[in-house]
Length: 237
Image (cartoon, rainbow, N blue to C red; front, side):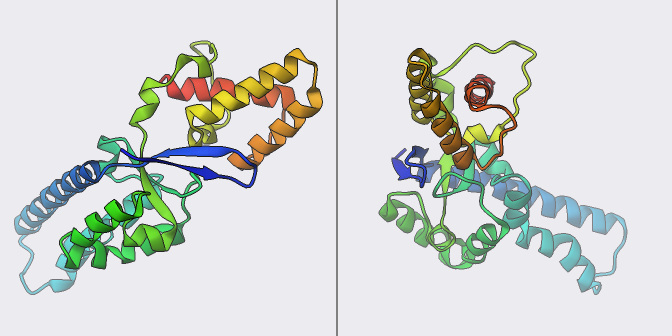
């Protein structure tokens, strides 16, 4: 698994854990099995309903369209995941770590024809290996990649803070951060607090809120504390 860093406009480095080729192939095979099961089930259902064979529109609607739109619909509606990706803790994200827009999903879906369908995945594999950021042609055009979230299981405990069992997080966007990001935020926050440098905390709060694309209602001091707690909550699930 390769890593690469993105320097955001807020001068915060995001470490992306790129999904390996093997993981992506296995995720695709899981999705393929699901699609095959769906086709078999649909054919049995249509046969049980005694649908005439000349009703092509029904077969297209029930079988062909869901298969054609499988990846586009799943990834759009499930935050960059298909069942296969979810099984392996993989997710489609933009290169800056943020959630892709529908247009991003659409572009990478359209180029599946070249990446996977026509070339049996050979173009996708070669491109992923050459780019260094886990990008097939569709990802290059869409500005996306596929990351693995498995590394979050083994996070260094020093980036975490204690949270009560009934804690309710406020900012799910913190999952875009890496343990290195949070470690840096925590160190700046702690040092500034010890020196009563609230101006630095205010600037830190502004940068973090911009990075997460949120508008905090709390004051800067409380916002940073909430971000640290939320990150700890999600990474310990």
